[in-house]
Image (tube, rainbow, N blue to C red; front, top):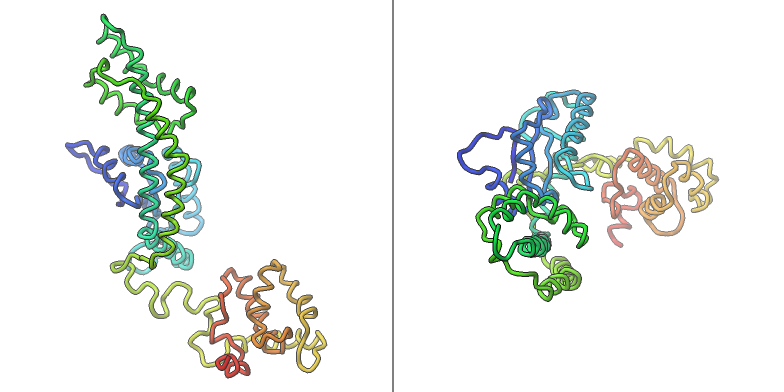
Length: 380
């Protein structure tokens, strides 16, 4: 479900239709154009109609290639400020920045940022099938809380009604002061304001009801709901997570996702630890003369430096010990606790990869294995 800011006027209750869809979809995407950012009154109403579904919302700042980096920073700040006035949530809504169409970038300066953002958005959408049961459980929680709140509202209205005369006048008064009744229930029962139904909509619905026919509060039913929210839901949550982890991975396929991870244009291909993946020559060779100079200052014995000697040099990178430990594990290819000149060069190459902002591989890729170790590693 996605919405752009171009909202047309309809002869039906557009906000109600949006709310109906919002209850049934897994993801809501709001689209904005970076080169002409404007949140109209109509679009603001659309966003407000999606209240209580903020957890499903994602924002796409599209056509970001049509402005400079400096302008993009200003537009992003303005968008977050505007959304903050409309979407009242403790967590900031996730915004994806990019140019989401198959056309050349007008301002290519932020290509890497756009690629990373596009990949993050794809991963978010890909995760939807995996978390479907969990989202349904969250919807159940929302409905249970709403039912509990409505029980308090109905019983409060019932309690305030006169037994004989002035019923219609009292009904109008109660509907008019429904906001105050909300506040009273909120304080008395420690209920979050977000759990209450929309005031205007509730007032409209109450106009056609006979308050004298409302049921009184049933404490036992409320206790059952409270017990479900406090205990049953927690058990169900654990069961759902256990079942989802045991299920085979589900992903969204086809359309925009087709071929996104294929060939040399897959995200991150040929960058960071993947640099040199298609080359015949070992990629570390390019900087090896520089690394060799450092290696021979560490007084190698039998062509190898000890862990203690290598540690002093590696610490100069100022990377955390946890990261350096992983680099050591990857670079010590023959697992003998020492580094020869190729392994030392590899360690420095991986440090460079990390300092340039890339992730380290979980295991050493074949193209990074030192030439003298390749036969040994393959046999192992």
